[in-house]
Length: 232
Image 1: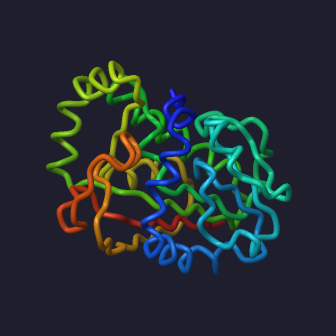
Image 2: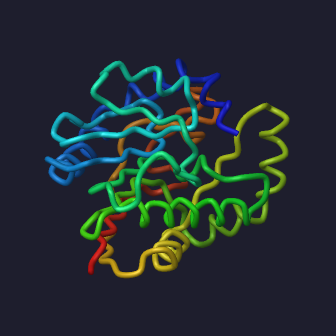
């Protein structure tokens, strides 16, 4: 798993280049939150699209080493590790955890592998955050009906993509993400913000970068930001 992004690192960066307006919008949401904070950025693929210099300290974690080599700033701490089992970061040592456009890439050959992966990631995030820490998830989600269809065809999709030597992609519903947050965070406040997408977008989202472009209103997914604030 994740060898896909090692192989496609160059084309992936080319493909995301036409989403500057969207990234700028998300940056305006993120930057006030990370100011003077210790930040852990999980699975950003080497694409730090916000002004990370506003943070007190920034750690980038990604399982694809080729993506990490795209980061040139020596002040950024780079960790080549899977978000489901973070061992190189001390518990209760991080102020902000960011997970941007990454959850749908962390899964496995079966549906329950994806659910278990999500729970492991959020459990780990809760452990690494300090007492007033905040988790910010930027993710594309599906409505209940489309999520159900995706679940039904999970094994078939996984099999086809494996034959194409490509990692599985699986999108969650808002309800699934909220259930996992509730399971893995003891006390928290949650708010969800919907972000409007515009222009021509890639519905395959990094699986086969740049092959297909469709208008944003035809995208089956909707972009959400989940703000999870730990409370005592």
